[in-house]
Structure formats: structure tokens, C-alpha cells
Image 1: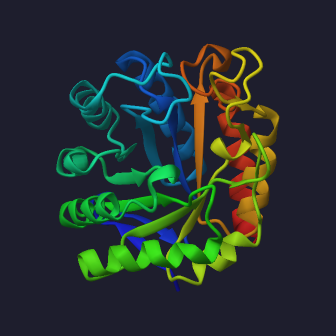
Image 2 (image 1 turned 120 degrees about the horizontal axis):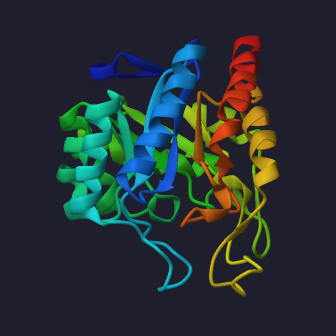
Image 3 (image 1 turned 120 degrees about the vertical axis):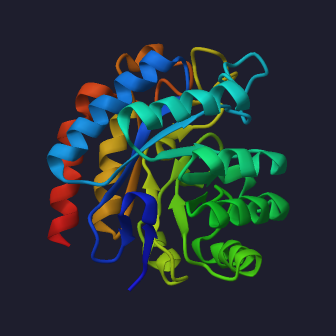
Length: 282
């Protein structure tokens, strides 16, 4: 059986375990909003009996336009995440973009996430893996939009060589480039990636992106199909995903990053209830 454990929080992810929910904001906007979203999602997941990890990025380094909002940055962002962690008593997930960020991020984040576009950056993967392994956290690696599922073997091998073990590694499916400005999710990918001996999650939010195709900005930002998030999430759980990655906002259209992809916070309970039922059924 493929199971990883976030020991500090007694959270297990993998075969035979409850569905793990990694959810929150796309990017940190302010502390009050982060606390609002995190508190609501903690309440919902506690009621449903689902393990919960709060997610938010302190920096969105891969924005389409140089003018796009990126977040508060490393220092202020980690301070904000640390406060969310302390006040809500929840584990934290956030992205890493540069090698020298690894130790600082792993000291705050229980789940360190490699963005999809950076999943083949060997030095970054190695630095994040070592820092996360040392801190007792999990490394969550998003499969690049350009990779076949079985090609993730190289990512897992890099982590194993850097840390001496593949334990603590989780792969994430977030769609594959399908022509221009479009992504698809191959439901057979989950079984293929789980053959590598690691749990696999679904990033249902970013899987509905239409990269560089926001009609409101003439391609200066990413478009999306919000209505498809639930469909992809439910299908992926049925296909064997061990965790779900979702982004919410109280007012999705006002979100400062990927507004066309994130869900209304009020939709969280309904969607997560259905995902729990599907997970139990399989």
C-alpha cells in the first residue's frame, strides 16, 4: 500500500486512507481573508471528518503579465502563513520557486509544493526535498503540463536520491496541454503515477485553466472554466486520486489571481461532501 504520513498532524494520505483536502486561496491577498477562508474550510472538513491542509501562495511567480498581482512575497507571506497556522491550528501548504527559499519555507509549511512548470528543475526539486525531509513535512510535486504520467518517475527518483527515500513524496495531476490555450485531464494518469509508489492528488482548480486565454485581458492573464472544477474533482477521486487540491474565495470574481477558476467559498461543503462519498464508494 502507498501511504505517506504528515506525522506532526497525524495525517495519512494514500491507499485506504480518507481523502486529504488541500485547499484555500490561490494567492495571499491579506491576513483577514486567509483566516476567513481557512476557518470556513476547517469547519467544513472537520464536520466531514476529512484531513485538512490550508493552502495559499506567497508569490505567483509564473504570471502571464508582469503587471499581474503576485502576492506579499517570501518574508511577509511566510509570516502571514505562520499566523494562519497558529490561529487556526492547521497545517500549511505553499509553493517554492527558488532554491534559497527551501529552508525558510519548510520551517513554516508542512507541505512544500513544486509548481508544475518547475517540476524538472533538478536543483529546486533536490533543495525542496532535502529541506522538507529534514523538517518532517511532505513534498507535493505538480506534474508539468508537458509530462506524461510515467515520466514522473524521474522526479520521484531525484527525491529518493537526494533524501534516501521516496517517503513523503506526493505527485499532483493538474492537466496536460492540449493544443493551444487548453488542458485536459487523463483519468488513467492516476493509476500510472501511483505505480511509482507515491500517493497522487488532483488539482481540480488549475486543471480548468485556459492558459493565456482570458478574454477580459486579451491574453494578459489566464482564463478558466469554473463550472468544470467539480466534474474534474469527482472524476479524479473516482479514478483513484488520494487527495484533492482546491482554491476558494468568498467573491471569486474579485480574486486577484485565476478568478475564473476558483470556486465560491459557499460551495465548499457541497463539493467536499460528494467527494467524500465517492472516495468511500471506491
